[in-house]
Length: 150
Image (cartoon, rainbow, N blue to C red; front, side, top):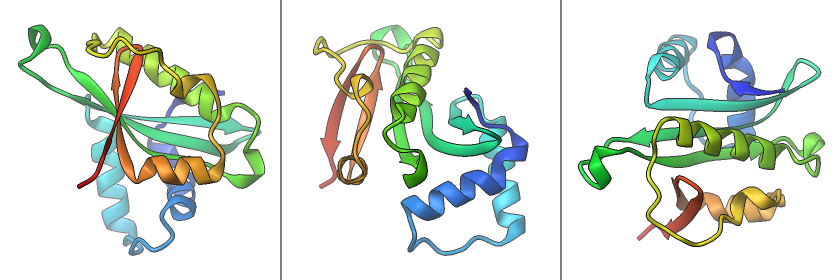
């Protein structure tokens, strides 16, 4: 099932992030709970998850960015994309990305790039996902543009 994360998902999302970013410092339970609550309550942040048999198998963060451009319509960014090894090659990354794209459209994100969306058409391998995580993937309605960090 593809859905938005909720307050009860904190521990499982943290496990996914530990796989994605194993060298991050461990958060105290209090800091993790406070931050998670703020993320869940933030109307511009959407943590999308794929749940398989009660376990979160894949996730990413879709963040809306307010803008004065394009009639003051927001654009969205995707970050922290991860699928657990045991659940790869099942189309979960594609499914969570599709869910987020549809959500971004519903939230009136604009389209500035006319290139066909290739990201949501296939599931990335682990190495491709890690390579993409080195850049920021910006979602603008039905297309993506990747910007490499300086």
